Length: 255
View 1 (cartoon, rainbow, N blue to C red):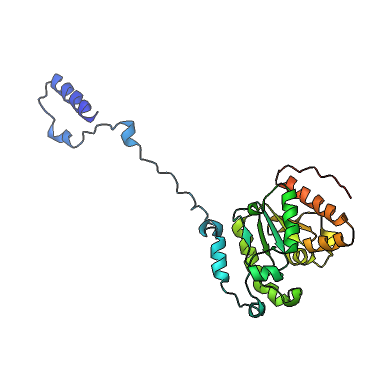
View 2: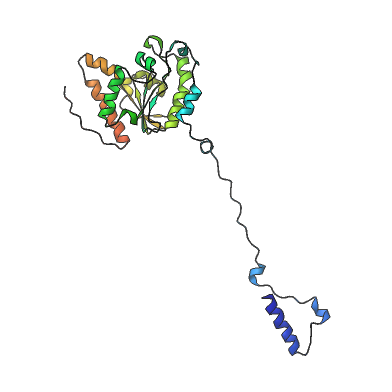
């Protein structure tokens, strides 16, 4: 466009009898630039830097990492009396996690959670829900057996609780079932009896938690000739299934 403007100007000079550009005018000649040339490229204003949360920076911790960190744990006195540490077992991406109190004698010997008589009852509960044991994850509040199956002490809970939380944060289940008074009271930090808090979802670090009776309690009640507690547990598990949007199998309440 500049060349065309110059050519038109020279032609007009030639038609007026001039053979070139007058020296006095040479410095005054200005060829109007095109509108596009007069526009200065406008750069977009720099936006704010994207926020980077800790969750986005830190990769999801695996159960293997948590287990390695726990190691051959001697953080409390239970490490001196146990035979085997019982970390947990099941699907590392389970939608449902069962949390008990602590390992018993059979669990201490085998290093696996809920493998004794109470474990057989839990297996029946899981099966009745239409699930398989390998589909869920099972662990305990404390990882080592308290001597004589006594309740864990506060310092023992304090040593183990961070690892339980890390396990659940790794798995990211959609629901947690707290089995028995001790597990429910510990996770929910309450002293309310299990008979009062069972049957209703509570919050545990953003995860819906259903408190229910421990399988050992169901065994004792059955020996006493009562199945009422079994049906209360089933009512609790039916709520869990509905939360997970899974079918609730029909059960006949035969005595």
